[in-house]
Image (tube, rainbow, N blue to C red; front, side, top):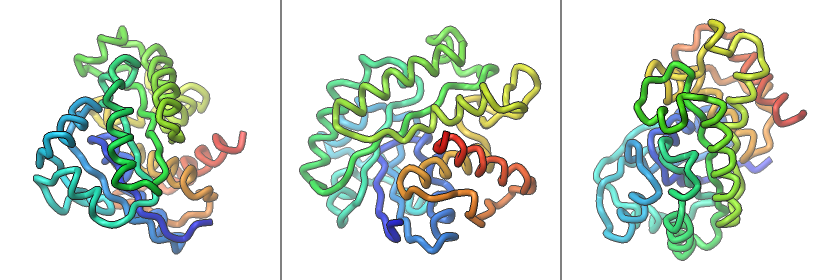
Length: 252
């Protein structure tokens, strides 16, 4: 297992969801995973490309899950040392619309690789909204979680292939749990993995699950053995269950 990793995520609040617990999970296994997240809330690939080409200082710079600076440009962060991996994602409201990814993703990936030619590219496949989500963009998918998920999966699979990136299948894992694990279907009173807005992931369990998926994909780790406990996670049995579910998904 690789013992050090430096990652850069060109994302939005959904990559913030992904990375909140990532550094601490790795540290519990004695691994140094330095995470950098360039965050603009709701940011689309089109806006990332505009911000890059016009060198706009409109990012929050998050380091190991915490905001350290605001008003940062993508270019200056790309020049800040070497990254082992770089991740991309689409804004969640456009995530199931394949036509919204291009040409911005290809252009952005090409530009990024000029700064970081040795970095491996990944895309975080985001997730469908909760059935009860009231975010107005959910109507674009008929307020149907399954339809939204199928569109997301199709779009991200094609997008990742177009730039030679590997997929971090967060959306697949979350939907698998919702559909196949008793107690996680909110239509029948099950536990939601979402925050109260219905589209971000919950504190701490949904975000913890997200970080576990990234950790599994990037390090090949057996998360069942990880001892990290997020602040506010009082249900230790649920933490154990989430670790087991993530492990089981990747070892089907």
